[in-house]
Image 1 (cartoon, rainbow, N blue to C red):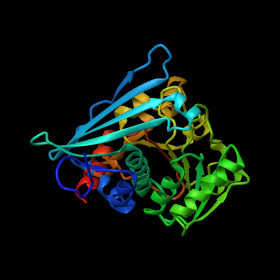
Image 2 (cartoon, rainbow, N blue to C red):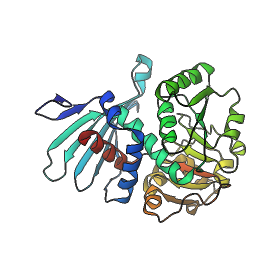
Image 3 (cartoon, one colour):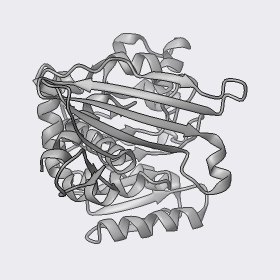
Length: 319
C-alpha cells in the first residue's frame, strides 16, 4: 500500500493528510451539495465480534453515488480505554463506482471527526441565528475542538465556553481548541448553567446516557446541536428542551432507529413523530426553510450517515 502522492497501488492517507485535505468551509459546502444529490446509504451493519461479553463490535457503513463507493469499517472495543487505546478505530476504503477499482484508503478517525463536525455546521447554517457568536460545548472529548472550528466556519463564533465534569478535563479541551482555533476566545465554564443561558449555539459531545442539558436554561433564539448520544437508550437532552424546541435531524430513517434523544420522549408521549420537522436533505433541497425567526429554539440531532463519509473521502482522494 502506497502513501499518498506515491506512484502505483492504492493510495493511503493518514490522519494528518486527511486533516490537510478537509478544511471545514470546503467540507460543509460539499456536504450541502451531497445532501441534494443522488447518494445511496444503506443502514449500517453492526456485528458483535465478542457476543459473550458484548464489548467488541464491528460497524460496516457503505454508501455510493454515480462516481464512487465508500465503505467505512470501525471497531468498537470497550477494553481499549484501560490500555490507553481509542475506543473506536477504523479505516475508510474508496472505490471507483464504474469499475470497482480501489482508489484510496484512509484513517477513519480524522475523517469521522471532521465530517461529524461539518454536518453539525451545515445544520447550523440553516438553524442557528446569523449573528450567533457564543458557543457552549458540553463535553471534553476528541470532538470538542472540531465542533468549535466547524461552527466558526459558518457563523461569527468568537467565544467558546467548555462545560465538563472536571475542571481538568475542561481545561484540556480548551487548550486543544486554542491550538486548533487560536482566533477564538476559549475558556472553561465555571458555571455551566450560566454558560448555557448565555450561548447562541450549544453543542453536546458527551458519552452520557442521561441528559446533560437543563432545557430550562436554554434561552430563546438558541440553537442546540446534539451529537454525543447514538443509541436508542441514550440521550443528552431533557424533556424541557425537547418539548419547546423545533427539531431537525441529519437523516430521518437513522434518527428514528437510533436517536434516544427523540425515541425516549416519543415513547413517553412527550412528543409525537411529527414533532421532527425534517432532515438535512430537506433543508438542503429547500423543502424546509430552517430557522423562521430570532426567537425560536432549534435542535439538531445527528447520529451520522455514510453519505458524509463518502463526500469527505472523495475530497481527500481527489484534492
